[in-house]
Amino acid sequence: MVGTMSLDGTWKLRGIDGRRGGVASYCMEGADERTCIDAQVPGEVHLDLMRCGQIDDPRWGTNALRARWVEEQFWIYHRTFTVPPEALEAERVWLVFEGLDHFAEIYLNNTLVGTHTNIFYPCRVDVTDVLREGENYLAISLDGGLHWAGDRPGKEYDPRHSDGPMHKRMWLRKPQYQFGWDWNPRLINVGIFRPVRLEWADSVRIDQITVYPELADDHKSATVNARLHLENVTDRAMHATLTLEVTSPDGDALPVAEETVVLEPGISTQSLAVTVQNPDLWWPRPYGGQPLYGVTCRVQVGDREVDRRQCRTGIRSVRINQDPHPQEGNYFIIEINGTPIFAKGGNWVPADMIYADVDVERYRKLIDLAVEANFNTLRVWGGGLYLDHDFLNLCDEAGIIIWHDFIFACAQYPSGDPQFLRDVRREVTYITRELSPHPSLVIWCGNNEIEMGAWDWDYDTMHAHPDYALYHMEIPRIVSIEDPSRPYWPSSPYSPDYSDPNSPIIGDQHPWHVSLGENRANFWAYRTDVSRFPNEGGALGASSPATLRQFLPENEQYYLSPSWEYHDNEMVTRSHMLLNEEWFDRWLGLNPGDMSLDDYAYYSGLLQAEALVEYSNNFRRRMFSTSSAIFWMYNDS
Image (cartoon, rainbow, N blue to C red):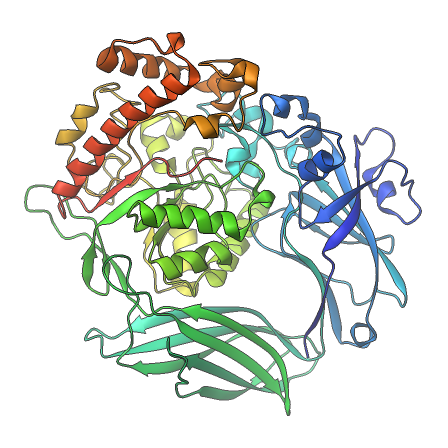
């Protein structure tokens, strides 16, 4: 039987600079605790420092600059716990950390039991031989990534930005936007940001399940496939009975799939399938309903159920129609259940600069607002964070389809490094399995703008070439094995004929010729744009006054105040504000520097609205010569 004990709650936390003794010495029982503070797990270091008054909210004003020291420290979490008797008697016991940011060393009872360098998949550490009866001492040291990446090469990987060689984000498997983008400041997170548990097993456990539907061409039947990724934790072969139970959207049980197998010690994968007659199909809004089927996978050894997993899924098919276009190039149409879908929506970025501070209620509000705006699509941008089950459950229910970039954006990544490549393989395998049940997730995409970087931004002239093997061979190989129900697209934008990746007549597009390109302030130029699948573009504009006042101090609530420039990251994107002034002069004959905050936000929003109308209406009237109108960006961090 698999058992668990949560280790969430209040821990102790301290920061050290590493100059007065090694980090490991602070992870031992008996280490000086006089400078420790209380920390919440799951959580993040900035949040804990705010609670105890050591820093002000780094999302306010220029406070993040005053808190820059946080990212430069080593942070040590520790706590004690008592092991249940059944865990001490179990065959195997693990510590499981669902999310560690970023480089972690895990100590149990003064012993280093594991390390971890990727926030995108859990850390599982075998502690069977280290646990003791009574009280156990657990400590985790964390580095936000700067120390870990310090001796890695940098200058060949981010040729567009002067700060790339300093922070070396391309080595760090964590959200890339934390290092500053052209829409947000720098705020590098560090912490135990997802749940922690002790887990034990006597025989067999389920590591993950992959669930995906196959819909017959006539839509009269479907197969719900489940792959059980199992671990026999013993040193002997074991007989196990596996079952797959599927319930209809109305709760009716369907025939059960069952199989008895022999599991050798270690990891193995077993497959089961249930046939569904006359399935209720899942559709994006407003093309139909969103019926969801219940799925339960069970493992039984002897007469005992030893583990189970449950989820929901939807039955639907997904295809990208790239038939020849009668004028030139090719179509790019997402087809769900054989029906062409016009994808309308925006780009999604993490909902906060401190992503541990986002809960399901904030997700719910943002999805509700997207539905109110008649969205049916969100593109998850590749510089952020993989979506979690809470978010995707809401999209499953709302009929919002997801184009999901893998988390690679606007840089060259060191996939020639064996350790980095092994880590990415594990990440992609985990993520594609974990998110497979969700019908709302319809396309996996290799990266954001890296193909375009090779074409337009001189990536191909640097020592480290932009990783064709990673995005064109390695990731699609894994996706085809682990998640065959979804198309894979190598990059965004991308042209499959090896022409300009941002060609308007083939593949998908980022049409920034307005705002950031040759047309700059002339948003009427969108009227002649023939892009087949525009999924990032539009017009720049200010947030609402209410949003601006959430981060601008009262004495800095004016255009281009120090806090304004810091949050808009004008240190690297000053040209964006010059463009903004062009817009005001061209369309209004006004100077934004002469306006109050409210007036500036109003006129900026007015111009942005007019531009987005041109963007959206142009593509909508071309349906399905163009099959999307997806703008940048839906939400702010």
